[in-house]
Image (cartoon, rainbow, N blue to C red; front, side, top):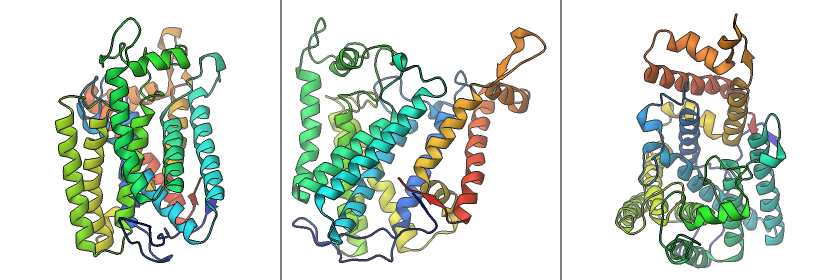
Amino acid sequence: MVKQALVAAPRSSPGPDLVATTPHDTTARLQSLDVFRGITIAAMLLVNNPGSWSHVYAPLQHAAWHGSTPTDLVFPFFLFIVGITTTYSLGGMMDRGVPRRTLLRKALVRAAIIFGLGLTLQGFPHYDLAHLRLLGVLQRIALSYLVAAAIVLSTPIRGQAAALPALLVGYWVLLVSVPVPGVGRGILEPDLNLANWIDLHVIGTNHLPGTWDPEGILSTLGAIATVLCGVLAGHWIRSTREVAPKVIRLMLAGGTGILIGLLWSQLFPINKSLWTGSYVAFTAGIACVILAGLYWLVDVRGRRRWTWPFLVFGTNAITAYWVSSLVAIVLDWIVIAGPGEEEARVLKTYLYDTVLASWLPPVPASLAYAIGYVLLWLVLLGILYRRRIFIRI
């Protein structure tokens, strides 16, 4: 659905426990959340579109296995934001008396659309169904959102808070306690862990990028937990408490999450591909700290001059990700023929070699291509933003 104006993010009615929330307020939008989302989407485009995958700027690479780089923060940040928006949207509709069954149906439809967009992207342009990768980034967003929405609609805030450690500890117990046939238990290496074994035996090997799927079945439990972290943060932001305590508590929660993640990592390593509990705590903690800072700076202090580029990305987030990813596939698919057959190159390589790599060293050229790609979409999406066109799913 396309809307010609920003839709105010509603605030929920008083909750049954933990936090008291404000009554209906349809005039205010949490602009800091749009900024945070925009920063995250811009970072997604930056890390997903180097000029050459052989010459990637080091901070824009994922950790090889255990550990974390700045790039490993991007996806969990987006899921954290999904949790906050879930709290806002479902809470607002419940305030207006929309039945929970209707809301669950809406969540199911939305998740199905996002999942379908992911499959469309995965298969483009040939759609070889025998080798189609079933899971992926958008599919993980869809599944995590749907489960988190079901939890929000079926439990009070205390139940949502209890579901978070239950998911994290339960997933940890599964990974370290359930023996993998032919391997044993507690092995968290790439080809030897339980999550990898389940993926191989449930969805097969033809679709996988390697021998394990970074958005696999079992690790989705960790992703759901990340969304729930955002849900709980959303409840706190929308409460009737004064602004200063909100910011301070968000900062404290963030610091606590980072500390828990680092301590837990001694037993359960920080790992994006497995989406471990320590990774959830660590990344959600950082997200809380960033959100607290943005909330104070943008929504409380009103410092918004610098936010325009990120509002452009943040208010059309799924559109920015999906369309830019589709165009990136096209650039890597169209072949530019040279004088000889050996000189044929795809359009992306041709542009990269001709415009940048011809005069820049490999790594700076690759980084410059990624930055240029982000700026291109800033211009294109800026047109939609100026016309107040926002595509919602």
